[in-house]
Structures are given as C-alpha cells and as structure tokens.
Image 1 (cartoon, rainbow, N blue to C red):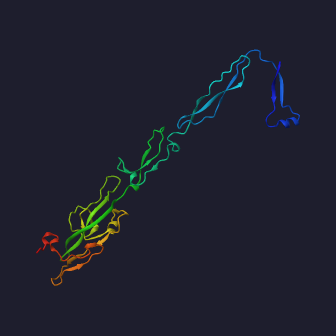
Image 2: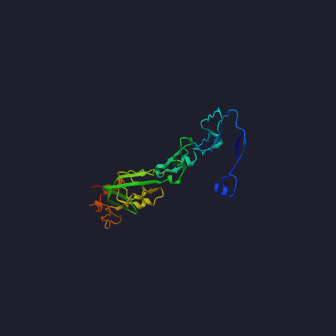
Image 3: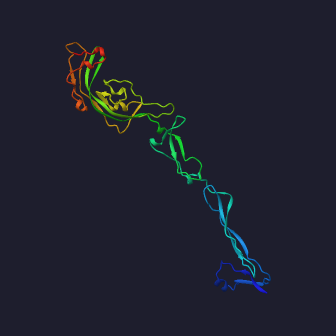
Length: 296
C-alpha cells in the first residue's frame, strides 16, 4: 500500500500564504503499488499551423511527449517528432503582390510599345516569384506614349546664295545669302491605329524662302528661318533641346515698277553669320521659273 497525490494547491497562492492560512498544500490518498510492468504513456503535442511557403498548405509539428513514466520492466520508446499538413489551410498565394511585388511602369520612351491592336501601350513589370506562373510583364494603354512628329535637333552651316522669283502685279526677283542644313533629326510620330510618319515636304529645290511650309532636310538652304514658326505648327513638336534659331540672311533684289524705279536694293541679314552681308549684285540667273532668267 502506498500514497498518491489526490489534490495539489494551485499556483495562484504562494507556499507561505497557504501555510499561514493553515491550508493543505498537497493532499494524499491511499494507492496500490503496481504489480505488473507498465509502459510509459506518450501523448502527442501539436504546435500551431505555420507557413512553410507561399501557396502551400500550412504545417504543424507533432511532438510525442511522455506524460507518465514506465514502471518495472515497462518500456518507453518515444517516437521522433514529425510534421503534418493542416487540412484546408493555405499560405497566401505566390502571385499576391506582397510576394511577387507590385507592377511598376517603365518610364519614358523605353516603356512604350505598339501592340498587336495598333495601340501604343506602356510596359509594366514586377519582380515575380518562382512559384507564380502568371506573367510578370503587362501592357496598358497610355496616352503619354503618343506623340506628334518631333524636331529633335537641327544645325546649319554656310550655304552660298539662293534665288527667288515671284510675281505680284509685276516681276520681283532677289538673290539672297543662305545657310544650309548640316544635320537634322526627327522623331517619328506615334498614334493609335494606322501609323504615320513625319510630314516631310517632297520639294527638292535650293531656293526656299519661307521656312514654315516644310520640314528641313540635310542639304536644304534657307535665307530666312525662325524656329518659332515650327513651334506653332499643329502637326509638329519642337524638342526642348533645340535652341532659339532665328536668322535672316542678306539679300539683293529688284521690285516691279517703272524702269526708272526698278533699281537694285540691298538688305543686310540678322544672325546669319558670314551671310549677313547682302550679295554683291542681283543675279537673275537664279530666278525662277527658267523662262524668267536673264543671264548676260
């Protein structure tokens, strides 16, 4: 015959308090000693479900724990801890933005693409995740990808002289100094639908006088040019890097009228460099059309 614990005082009171109150800390009762061998008692303790990877079932750890020791020749073989899936409980998907990241725009011209539906769209990308099988690139319509034809740069050099014939109640002709387009660069327009190109002028002559009616090409010669005329066009944009180009070269001319008044006149140029000075004389051989040429 032996004893076993029947009651044990709770932890809410200290040992000293219980003693002062004349309270029993432990109450025992009679018990028969075991007469046969008994194996230990093992209980499986389960942890909380935990995340082991995006999109996967949560898992928990099963830890076998001895809650009553063996007696006599009883055995106590405690199994190794293991894991098991938590049924129906999943971690957040691998394509969620907290895992794969947010889509962010590729800024500037580098992010603009003409897609199969002939619509200019902006490219968006995200970091992605190996466990996500959705695309990490997407395209969205973006009006900032559309643009007009753009004059990106232009440079002039000396270009000799050009002639101009025109009629206004008579004959008026002039010979003007000129500057030649050394280099020019355009950026083609981007529009939704059928694609377009810059409205290049098909004229191919050396006697341009009014610069607002055409897009300059390399080799074209101008006796007057003002970049502001291009900035006012609805079909063209002038890039901010293009400087304030405005010049008028010197010219020598004759106006229509009585022979006594049809004398040669000269106008000096402005901002035309070596071509500011008017030509030495009027040269009718440069006149247009050919029938009006008077060459001596």
